[in-house]
Length: 198
Image (tube, rainbow, N blue to C red; front, side, top):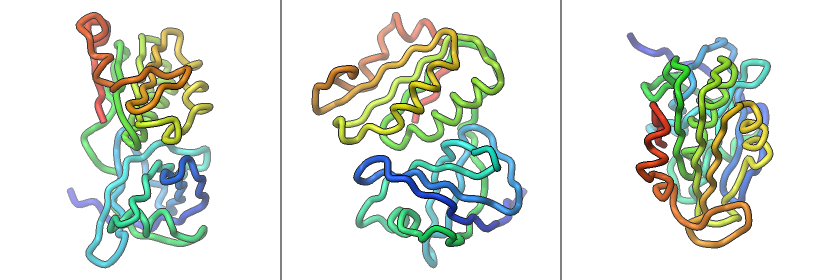
């Protein structure tokens, strides 16, 4: 089944770090999405880039968390769009979707791999899942940290939530120094039935 192109209109941009942005696009086609799917944007003639959906807002807009790579072919175009600009895209699509099971789940990611995992955790909460959830997230330094308030609000939605935040290059209170793989001990792994890695 072919997925038709549709138009996405940029409604807001928020700077999260020096090179990571939250972009929210409206879509007149009222497309549905599953937690973990992505959209392929036509960034320029012959240049297509896929970005995972981070959330859907109250009006059905699509939220993305995108790292702007200065010499990248797609991210500068998308991150620098003026508010109100229209861009063509295909989707949502993809197979990295949240399974509809209320079992213990562990979500592990780094950098903007945060986006689909965040959407999956939001969806788990919206579905009323009560099983144990873990969110293991890592970046290089405290300058790369984003969504602290949103992550804390997300954690409060679950009765049994484990949060592990790693910084690989610096030490800072509230974070563990190291890598997300440090969490993957036999004891920790045994506590979860499903793993989502991005």
